[in-house]
Length: 291
Length: 300
Image 1 (tube, each protein chain N blue to C red):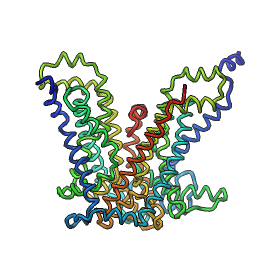
Image 2: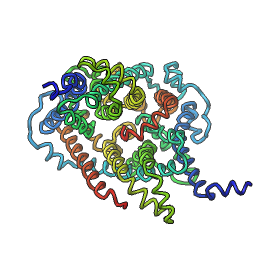
Image 3: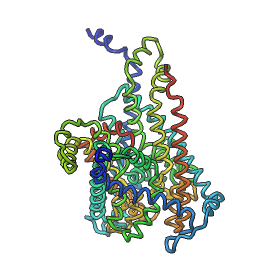
Image 4: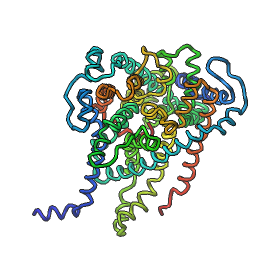
């Protein structure tokens, strides 16, 4: 009897606080969030069951599709630049600059709060007084209202977050590079493979698992961009930077429409789960094309 | 002699020089904005407008820092080109310290307890429960944020430190995962020698496991503290009240209080610098630990 149950009693004691936290702040909210998405609920009254009405409304909601489009644009820009730059940085760190100082310096923006990074760039990219526009006008370029124009708001926010995350992502990839056995490079070298060739046929295939992990984490993270938007543009100008999480926030806390906001967050959740699933499945599928 | 040393080294190497140039550029792009932050904070607001591009502080002044730290009267602040908007810095700093410390301590400790159960104890269903914990890593914070907000509201805990801390206090799947890895790798021998009956597990946990895992626990605590110090979304929802407002929220309020076009830039930059200071200090003290743990941890 005791042996079958093992240390169950004492184990229950040890996981008790974590289970409390899990049930109260993950499990119950998840179930409640799904339930609320089928209700009409302004924070004052009681939730009223309305079936899938929220979802059909969302489907016809132009602001939702706009938010989705804006978010996708952000995710595409952010991930594209971040991955390429971080891969470049990681290779540089791996080849020439392994020092902790370099790695630490590049990591610094990641350790500072989003809010601080956003305020810093809001200042540097200010239309009138920002140093970036100042430099651009010295060079003879026209001034750009980075956060203030519909065209530039999202690319600018994407840029700010690339700046914040590039060092961190580079470190993750760097850790992956460190784990590639050196003798593979020696063999490639003996075979007379060019650095480019070596990169594509040794480095990239072996790096793929790490890249998949990095992509999953960064894509899921960037779908949830909020802090930077909230501090700089607040979703504007007009709807130009109202990303999905900003829309959820405004629906819930601006319009007290918790049912609708819950349905929006269920949709976001489903999208994220799909993204993770697809990335794991397809990117891992051809993991070992190195013989 | 010289030639032979050179030739023994790898053939030189424009590639290598080019690579170092790129590293230098990357470092400059990373560091320069922080220096600009400092330069702005040390400038006087009224001079910034006419001196936007000067590399040195425009009309050097400690005014912005004084303003942020509450050492300037409103009149002085306005004379200095501030908007008159105030930031109750010391209060927000206190709140940030309390919030980050409580949540870090609770989260790391309770996660360590759970990690111990998952790594060192044998019980039916152990792996299943662990897998369930792990899948919650996938749930996006926004998804649980709305129902959690409602729960905290129903409990009457809006604008209290408890309401802000509770969701972070008991665990994160990541912390459990992180510590479990280390606990798994510990040798069983000492533990077995000390083990007689169930009650002794507490002693083993406190006197053997925790001390032996001091390094990873410190690293985790450091990462958690930085994350909590920087947390914005949840405190924005739950901790709007002045009495519990943390620095991140305080800074964004400070910014939005100023009318457009008349932002107190040097005040804002001084505020952000001071708010980031604890992170800079932690980083100077433990930078190596943070840097080296990133590769291992994979995720924040």
